[in-house]
Length: 101
Image (cartoon, rainbow, N blue to C red; front, side):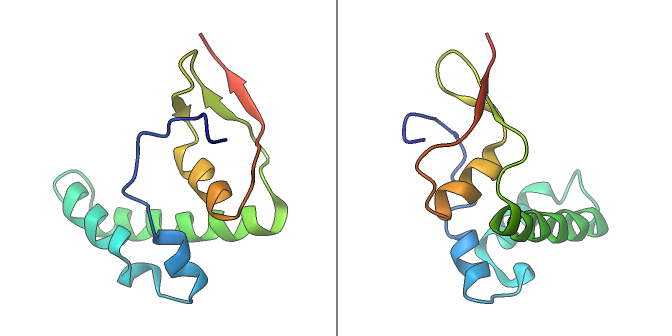
């Protein structure tokens, strides 16, 4: 897992905040996302996204990874950055990947 490049650090700390019981709408990630997406996403879309993100995290905690993380030939994640960060936070040392060229 350490060899993979997710290229996204906006979520750093988000899952720790959720684990401490913090409301997803009071997290640093939400504040950054809300500001970044305000021109392209409606407030309702941002709300649905945050709810889905918290639900996905709970599902991965309970059931593990269901779909592989997609990685290119340079170990850059092309699909699954959020799932990768969730698994990394949960302490996984290895994960299932699908390499694309």
